[in-house]
Every structure is written in structure tokens, then in C-alpha cells.
Image (cartoon, rainbow, N blue to C red):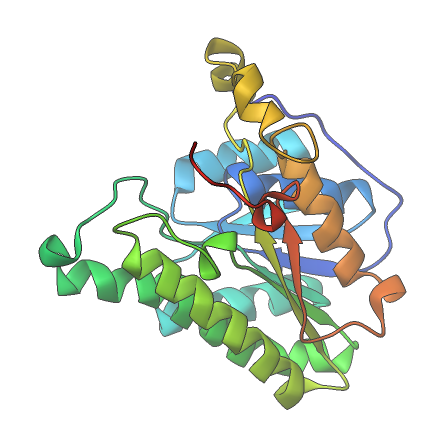
Length: 258
């Protein structure tokens, strides 16, 4: 059961496109923006889940099925947004392949590597390419969802780490190419408990999970959504080409095994 409420804010006339938004961090970002008055277009591969989510979220949300690695689908989706709303003010690139199963380098299939990079890195490039003319018309902004894995790794995560490292480089390249009309930034989450509420209640995180973070807890989707919303706002008008780490301080913690 999806535990969402219809979060209608005062309409601000702005339209945002959020990818990978049927669940987790993407869904949290969409809900936050709606609470601030945005009209949000959610995209995802999961048609059934996407349709159910926007039904709960109300009139300020609509859904488009999209594989972000397919340029034809990206172009059609962006055209649909413009046809329906006549404008686009923000792009949030959250869709990603984030397989929890680590694959050893010796077992890494080239097709899997290519799929991860196609979704996680080529997808944001394609979306920026097709959204740029419309974002430029309204002084819009792009936020790419990267990861702390771009700067540190567990074993056997080559594809994911490479894709997110590339996304950080793409972010500052886009900021230079598209500025000053379009600002482009990246948010790199650490450990975010992005599970549905029922799953969080059924298997709550341990005290140790929370205590190891300098901030005293594991992150929530709202922590990420608040940062994204700020970066899309006029208050961040002097901020572009930057990475913002939302990880409870973990990447600044010196850890040695005793």
C-alpha cells in the first residue's frame, strides 16, 4: 500500500519533470515539489506503480512511462509535457539502475555495464539535450541525482561508481554549456532509507545503523527532496555546477577497523 497524501500547495505555475519517480527518492522529490505548488510530471518504467502514485497525489501530478536511455522515448515524453503544460521549468534526473547485488569484475557482463551507463549517465544527457530549449525559455534548472559512491566504493561496484562519477562530470560540463540561463547541480545522497513505509515498519533499521552517522540517523527521502527543492528555487540563483552531499556526514568520517 502506498502511503501518500494529496499534497496540494498554492500553484506557482512552474512545471517539473522528475525521472525514476514511481518510488523512493524520486517519489519523495515529486511529493515535496507538489507541496510547494509545482505541477510535477513523474516518469518511470513501472507503468502500474506510476499510475497508482499519481492517482493518490492528485491533480498536480501526472505520469509518463519512459526509458530514459531511449532517445525516442525521451523526445516524445518531453514533447508530451510541453503539449500539455506549454512550459518546463525544472528537470530532476533521478532514474538509475542501482542493483544491490555486487558483481565481481571478472563476472561483469558488458551488456550489464552498458545498461547501467545508458540509464545512469546517458539518460541525464539525453534529458538535458531535449529539455534545454524549454528550460532556457524560463530560466530553469537541472538537478542530477548522483551518489557518494562517485567518490568512494565498496568492492565490485564498478558500473554504478563509474556512472555516478561520470554524472558529476556531466553536471559541471552542462552548467558551463547551458549557463547562465540554466543552472545545473548534483545531489549525492548517502544512505537514504527510501523503502515504502510498510517495509520500514516491518524491518526497522537498527540503533547502530543510525548511530554510526555523525548526524545521528540514517537519511530520509525528505532530506534529499528538501535539497533538490532548494536548488530548483530562486534562492539558489548563484549556485551552479556544484555537488551537494546529503549523507549525514559519513564521507567526512575517518573509519579504521580495530
